[in-house]
Image (tube, rainbow, N blue to C red):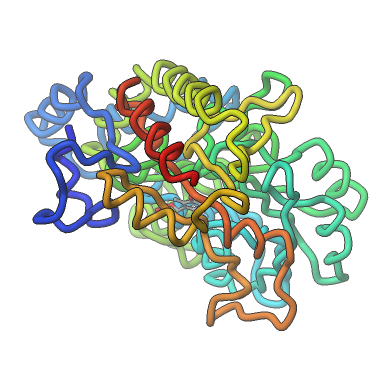
Amino acid sequence: MIQQLSLFPYLETQASTRPPDFIPVYTPVLNGREEKYVLDAVRSGWISSLGSYVTRFEEAFARFCGVRHAVSVSNGTVAIHLALHALGIGPGDEVIVPSLTFVATANAVHYTGATPVFADVDPVTWCLDPADVRRRITPRTRAILPVHLYGHPAPMPELQALADEHELLLIEDAAEAHGAAIGGRRVGGWGRIATFSFYANKIITTGEGGMVTTDDDALAARCRLLRDHAMPPHRRYWHDEVGFNYRMTNLQAAVGVAQMERIDSFIRRKREIAARYRKELAGMAGVTFAAEQPGYTNVYWMVSVLVAAPYALSRDELIPALRARGIDSRPFFHPLDTLPPYLSATPRPVALHLSRCGLNLPSSPALTDAQVAYVCQVMRELAG
Ligand SMILES: *Cc1c(COP(=O)(O)O)cnc(C)c1O
């Protein structure tokens, strides 16, 4: 399992310095029917975007999210772009996004010609803070685009009320939160439209891949049209507008169908791993976990902690110290409004604070209990 990691540059460490029992931040689990289905797709000859696995994957994913439609696409970034474009968001519009997220959320807004406007996040949920969103609404605001960061749902009921009050669209970036829920209702079905990613380290993977989910029949049809060069299914080589090639292949979908057969067990295991970390690190001074809000189900894409005094090491000192003991970890994202393309004069204070002390610990469902115990033991040894 660990050997496979060298295939993923994102997860790579220097092979020569990696001990044999190195614990990565994430390993995809591909030992179900993935091989069988991919082989079947290859042998069938249906390897591009037509093929039964695409339909099966979309149907299984829509059922999982409790929505009417799931439209597969080539990755999670274009899923957001497609959703925004299908809703008619473009030049002159503003879309409110959290400052603390992966850069793709803002880039997808930028691709449409609209402007991403960065709102601060909540110190407890680490997701979009409705009070700060309210302050950033202008006459140009068209949409609010919350992110369910590291697996914890954003406060959708509050954001929906705000969107209704100002007649704004609500769009979910659920790339990190497949299966997360509020009051038992899963993400992907809260916004007018939602998007997911199936990158190798996401909750399920198709290698590269993404999905758009919605209950709106017309919007789903529009996404299907636009992802295939805006070519109507019954009028070949006719195009009323400029579309995209954002299609997923049957090979990717074959992996997706196999992953959907096990998604419940992945999530169960991820919640178990998070509970183990929490129990073993409980009461460790200077180490704080994200609080799962009452009624909210966190799927712990990442098991994340904030590291601060009196813990002996800063977050930036802890990463190499863990690495030296064979444990990989990742810092939180930089606030997007501190990056050159999106630089603002007034960084959002909560996002900035979390970004400086947030750390993602090994979080793969493939982790053994012994590995989790070892990470916790090292965290205790380094605590000072
Ligand atoms: C991973 C991710 C994306 C982009 O997904 P890709 O499939 O890598 O394009 C978008 N938003 C968030 C919050 C993500 O974590």
